[in-house]
Amino acid sequence: MVLLESDLGEGFGAWAFGDDEALLDIVTGANIACGFHGGDPMIIRRTCRAAVDRGVAIGAHVSYRDLAGFGRRRVEVPPADLVDEILYQLGALNTLSRSVGGHVSYLKAHGALYNTAALDPDAAGAIVEAVTLFNPGLPIVCQAGTVMERLARDAGLATLSEIFADRAYQTNGLLVPRSQPGAVITDPAEAATRAVRAVTELRITSIDKTVEVHLPEPVAAICVHSDTPGAALIASAVRTALEDAGVSLRGLGHD
Image (tube, rainbow, N blue to C red):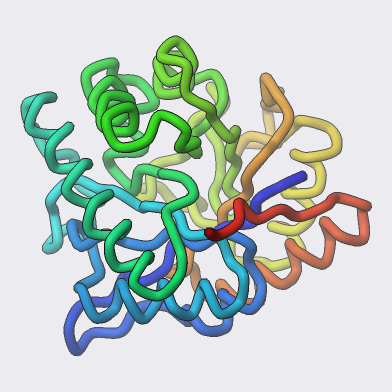
C-alpha cells in the first residue's frame, strides 16, 4: 500500500499557496506546513479540518525557520536547537489538528531540511531525537538509502520510503536541485508513468537518462508538490495510474 501525499497549508496570512482543496480530494496524506516555512494558525487549523473531513491523514511538514526562503535554503542551526524547533512545530500541529478531531500521523521534513537530513547526521539526528521525544510511534517519511532512514531505523523508528512523482533524480538517486533545468516534472502522464514504475519495478530513470536508479526497497509514499504547475492534474493522473495498476492507496488514519 502507498501513501499519496502532498505539501499543503503553505500559505501565510493573506497569501494563498497551491490548490489545497483540489489536492485534498485526491491525496491520502496531507503534509501540513507547521509555520516555519509556511502556514499560520488559521491556515493550519483550516487545512487540518479539511483533511479530517475527507479522511486524509495529517503529516507534520517540519522545516528550517525560513519563511522568507520558503524553507528551501539551508540554515545553519545547532542540532540541539533544531530538535527544539521541530518539537515546537510538532506541538503546534498536534494541538490544532486535535482541535478539529484529527492527529499527527507521520512526519516529513520540508525542502532544505529534507535534503540536508538525507546526507547530514546532525540534521537527521535532530529529527530522530525530536520524533522520539514527541512520539516514538510516529513514522518518518523519507528517501530510502539515506542517512535519515538509517538513523531513524537505528533508533527504532518506523520509516516510509518516499519517491517524488514530480521531481527528477540524479544518477546517485538523490533529487536534482531545483536550480537546475528539468528538476520539476509538470507533465501528468510522465509523472504517472514514473510513479507506477517506481512502485512496480523499483526503478526511476535519471534526469540525463543514462542510469536506471534502483530503489533499495518498496515505495511506501509518493509525493506531488502543491506548488508544481498543474499539481492537482498531476496528482489525479498519478492516483488513477496507480489504481489502474492495482496499487492500493493508504492513509494513516485519525483518532
